[in-house]
Amino acid sequence: MIIQTISMKSVTAEGMGTLSVFEAGRDVPFDIKRIYYIHGAPAGVQRGGHAHKALRQVLWCPYGSILIRLDDGVEKTEVLLDDPARGLIVEHYMWREMIWQQADSVLCVAADSYYDADDYIRDYDVFKRLVKSGGTEA
Ligand code: TYD
Image (tube, rainbow, N blue to C red):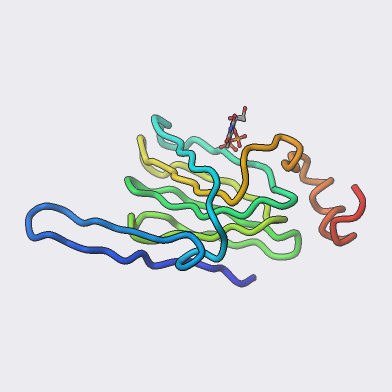
């Protein structure tokens, strides 16, 4: 499985922290219509457990440490997001689970579409069948 990560441009001001930045259509391969973030989760929490039919996203963790488990229906891999200047591109038809390694870690997501509950695949068996059929039948 090819994992796409982005290394954000980071500008450190001596003694004043670091500014990290990425730009839609330049550093990530799509435009961004929606940003959301998950905060206030205790260590050990697992979220996700779904895939998307069309949505493309970039995930990053500006604070803390979150393990991202990815499964394209054929292969599985893990990426640890613990660097505020690193982003992970998650394409459509990618089953994902996010596990909080540290309390209060923040997961930020920038997505290429507005929220659409119908774009979710929440049943793993349905996901596997859709991957096998190229997305034509569940
Ligand atoms: P969900 O995508 O299931 O998050 P996770 O996989 O991390 O648990 O979303 C959690 C809830 O938030 C669900 O009820 C849908 C709602 N939600 C929105 O209303 N708008 C959004 O943009 C997102 C991402 C979720």
